[in-house]
Length: 256
View 1 (tube, rainbow, N blue to C red):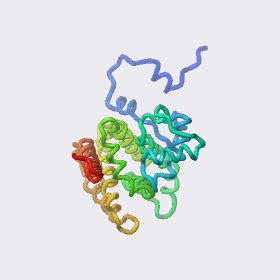
View 2 (cartoon, rainbow, N blue to C red):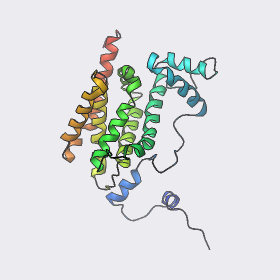
View 3 (cartoon, rainbow, N blue to C red):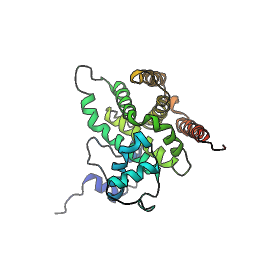
View 4 (cartoon, rainbow, N blue to C red):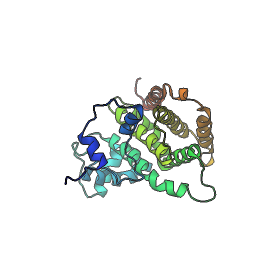
């Protein structure tokens, strides 16, 4: 008697001849979630991870720079960094931050959702998780505008947008969103816009415990009352990220 293929394997091996429904298409597009699955192979190899994890400790002082990478390589016992080891240079360090902080949300969510003050409802959980992710930038927020300048470069924007999309998907999933209708896309696009605008706001926020950023986040989330709120979200992200990047480059003396 033949052994039945696991559902996920069977889905990959065979294609149905019947038209796919919207719900089926959305299910097929769901990204990896760290909550209930072991992590898939990450974007970094063993040597990259060794260097980046060591270099990350130097980011608060030296920023997401080649200097931080060099110090990390030294800490890891390497004499120098070969260009082939980290072909994306400083962006590799930025991406490492985005990747590791996104994965960390799953473990943090179990703590956030417990206790008397735990958020109730999907919306409240989305707010709490988004705020938690923003707070993960606290130690590097003074270096983040320069990171945005790097992320806005044409060669790095696609990977930056992909990480942003995966973060939004992770937040909605951890919050318990189970919708499989067209709003699946619009909710994630909207959250991407709100998160990134809040992140940019935070780079100029000097209020205690970033209370003004918290107000800004809640205000923006409160403004989103319809599907139409997602229209142009990605375009707006590119726009204000690029603008922030240009301003940083100008402050460094670039003729832009």
